[in-house]
Length: 113
Length: 111
Image (tube, rainbow over all chains, first blue to last red; front, top):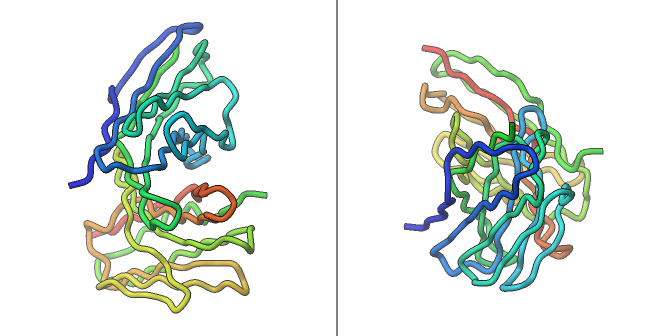
């Protein structure tokens, strides 16, 4: 059974803190993605990665960075959290370019106070 | 202009009804199309891919119209368990494998 896990389901941080969100997949997938989901805006892509140490900006990368040191792990970093980064963060992975399924983690609901 | 647009609904239908959702996409080069289902406070999960010739999976039928750049999802004989948000997703893997999601259409099936 495929599995994508995220380090926390709920997280509360203060403005200015550095925040790490971790995502791990056990399917040996090449591609990994970080999205945020907000009411009325849907899922928006923050960053994605094709391979270890590779990263590409998505639609809303400002205020975020990512790290992919190992194939199974993709981390999202908020360098200095702000209240407008309060959101649901979803990690996903896919096998390759021609795959037809994204597998999502359960999400992390981040609140920045 | 958004890459993918959906009517947010909500759609409230009685059990047994047939309901249809449409979704339009802006990039004519899009190559892969999907419907995902998202239950409240859960992650999205693939419902079905959408193929050019149209495809059916039980009570669910998906169709693609490339000329008009829209995809549709038809649910027949609605069940209470079909209540969820349905997300339209398109992908152009030749330009970076980025998936674009619609904002979702909310469906509630009423007893």
